[in-house]
Each structure stands twice: as C-alpha cells, then as structure tokens.
Image (tube, rainbow, N blue to C red; front, side, top):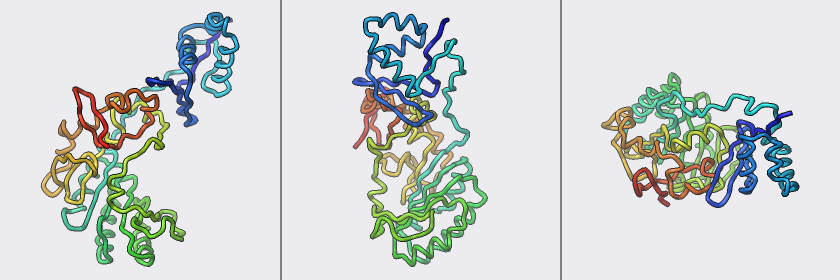
Length: 319
C-alpha cells in the first residue's frame, strides 16, 4: 500500500544561513533541526515514504530516528494520500486601515480629541496614549476624552501616566475604570515595580518616559503566530498599519524614529498615511533586512528598530 509522511499544514520549515527550524504554529513551539532532516522532509513532500526509506537503507538508524522525531513531536503524520488536507491560506490582511497607534501627549501641543477622532475614522483597533506630564487638574479632561471614545471603534486603549503618589493613582483609577475601552492604566516612574493593588488593569513600572520611548524588542521577544509568519514575508508587522504622534504633534512611523511626515495640528492623519514615503516602512519584509535575512527565526522576530536603506529594497537596523 502506498503511503506518505506529510507535514501538518501549520508546521513550517524555515532556513537560515547556519541552521534550520521547524515551527509548529498550532502548539506555538519551534525546534532547531539538522540540514539532513530537512533534506529528508523535502523528499517526503514529493515521494512515497517507502521509496525515501530505501534511499537511506545504509543510514537506517538515523532515518528512523528522524521519522520518530517528526511523528512523536506531531509535526507529521502518515497518510494514504499526498497532502490530504487543504493548505492554509497565505493570508494576513485585515480590514482596518490603521491597526495600532502610539500617541504622546502633554496637554499642550495639539488637540488629543482631534487625533483620536481621525484614528477612529481609520478603523484603528489599538491605541496607546503616553502622557508625558500629568497633574490632578487633567483628570476631568481625560475623562471627557474617554467619554467621547465610547462611540469609537477602538478595541482597546492603554494609557501611560507618570506616577505621582498612591492616592493619586487610586483617584485616577477610580475615575477612569468604568470606561470599557481602557484595557490597562500603567503608572511609570513608579518607586516600586509592583505596588500592592487589587485592580487587574493597573500596572506600576519603574521605567521612565525616555526608556519607554527608546525601548526596542530584543532576541528574547519571539512571536510564534501563523498570521505573523505570513505577514513578515511581505511586510514589517511592527510598522505595518501603524502611525504614531509624538509630544509635539509630529506624525511618524514610530515615536523613536527621526523621520517625520507632518503634524496633527495642521495635517490630517489619513492624508499622511496614504503617502508612499510614509508606507515605505510598512512594506519592508524581514527578508529585506540585512540583520535578519540569514536568521532562521526571522519570521518570529519583532523588528521595532528604525531602519536605514542601504540599496534598492535592502535595509539595515539602526541601533
């Protein structure tokens, strides 16, 4: 009887310069594998199992150990058919024009309500508001802003507020906790990392505003997600459908980047994001970045660094 050893559709082999990984996007796991196993897997994708096994008759123990690895790890399965299941679609597109936005605000430079209204018109899902300054008098202004947001389509809002003291933090939480779109209130510059609070959506961190602004993801920040895998082959998932506004109202791809494209005080976000130069960073795949091209885990990395163009369609990270 003819039989095949098929990889599950949600298991992908990714090649790097020095190694390979097999990534299981259903179990959210990955493993480094030797190139000899990759050669066997490639043969098994097109050839009957028994014929492949015959080719490795002089390396029977190695072949059997590789097959055991694939079966026991549930990366592959035996079947009478070649690819019996429909392949997973290479689809990552979502209907929103802007997926996420980071906004710095100091209650002075521009109208926060204007920015949020324009983001809602772009069907933005996730908004992060970073207050660079705060005093007690600002609380009602914030409450009025979030009252307006009730009619907007944001899925969640995260707000960063400079820590003043425990009683002020409690007052802020009490006033804002009933605005359902607020997913989390983060108090930065806190004297302690975790203060004794019972509220699930309150977080205290020691980082200051500059540390938060200039933070980049590192090699420990790994994403094992099938949509992310497909997206990073065509786009940069960190930058794609992202727009940021700094404390001066400057519209950017990312808060920490040098390049700017306009100002929320005088420009419409929609007009800015539809320009080719603004969307350049959206369309840089991980395969176009020198620092990642040869990394087997390139489709699992988060690339939040600013980027520098070094040649046609090739970029490098700015550290």
